Length: 130
Image (cartoon, rainbow, N blue to C red):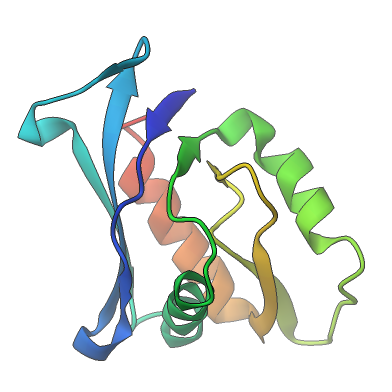
């Protein structure tokens, strides 16, 4: 997996929630501007997801982590443990499970359509970067 410093903050007031990152290879910091990664959750398309990410960051959840698809399923299982399901809702994780921050994510029930849409958007944004 590639290291990423997520040094942004959510900004739902301007219509997006943003996590910015700089990819690192082989333990050395990348210095080129094109190595910087920005993951955006559009609050106009996914308002509940953007708000949840904003709340998580504002509450002190880490915004530094590693994009780690291989470990996402295990992190998701641990994060969701103890949070009951609700009909018509998904248990949203902020930061998303694909980002390994070394700590548990904040979990909140949000609309399924919103959660799955934002998850798809994140997947498309990091598809080729990591």
